[in-house]
Image 1 (cartoon, helix red, strand yellow):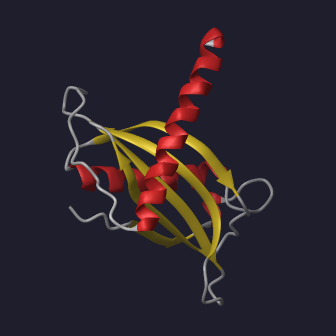
Image 2: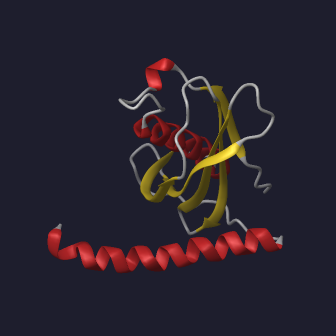
Image 3: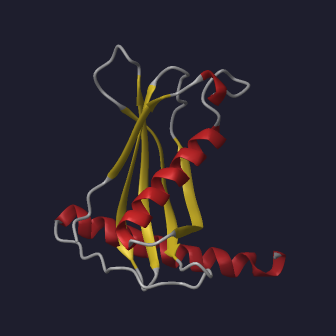
Length: 155
């Protein structure tokens, strides 16, 4: 199965504005979830739900009226889970190049109509870059386990 990135492109709108005059972080998170959902559902061929969003990093604000590009790509699969790398870019309409604004990893699980987990096709990295991405996802899984252990007394 080919692992082509899912890309959304659109212009940020005045309704996306925060109190500082830039795009609201919640709007960016919505776009991340939408692109991740499209990627996971395309990969699995089934309805998929978000189970984890981690390490979201906002590098720079996105300005209202900029072209926004959201790239989503599978970087690791488990039995029913898919780890999706999301990168958000933007550019001024008068500029030719995009600048990276946000990055995160989001994990989806494929489910049936009753919410029961379904198996997903295995993603096998072939290029060096893909192998590095898979190792990145595995390291993050280990870190999440440590974080969850730390959080248990407070849940």
